[in-house]
Image (cartoon, rainbow, N blue to C red):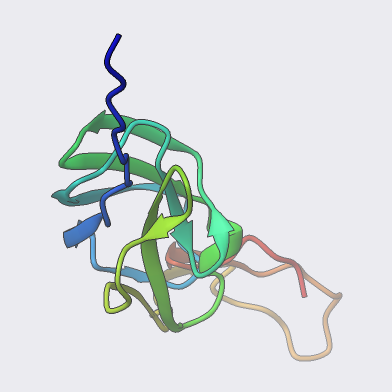
Length: 133
């Protein structure tokens, strides 16, 4: 009987692009598409150091869920792929989180009286967080 020794090494995953590459702060959770090569089943996608829930499509495509709590504030965050065994992609792929832009389209009521009762004012528009002041 002859023995054959085989060295198995995990390849380094390479990220070619992510989509989207930029999102607004405070937006809802979304799916990030990671394209590249040498992704292995069982690979993880990291947002900075946070592992994300993923769907592995192939050695060239992974989808990851970015939850809204990760993108509350503006900044740049590293995206990496880690293959089983801990082999990680090189740094350099970033998701940019831009400052939220609030667009007020309407308010209600449109009139209040100077010394009248306290009223709740509703603000309608885009990217306006659902809070009460």
